[in-house]
Length: 65
Image (tube, rainbow, N blue to C red):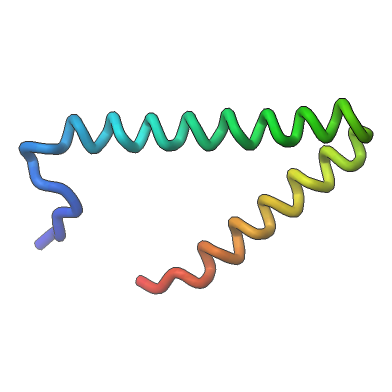
C-alpha cells in the first residue's frame, strides 16, 4: 500500500509547481553566491555556499518520517 501525496488529477500541476519552486530557489541561491563571489572574493562565495548547504542538511535532518 502506498500513500499518495497528491491526487492523480493534480499530478501534472504538482510536478510543474515542484519544478517552478526548484528552479526559482536555484536561481536565487546562484545569484546570491555569485554576487558575494564578485563583490567580496571567491573564498567568501564558497564559504556562503558551504554555509547554506550545511543549513539545508541540518533542516533535512530535523524532518521526521
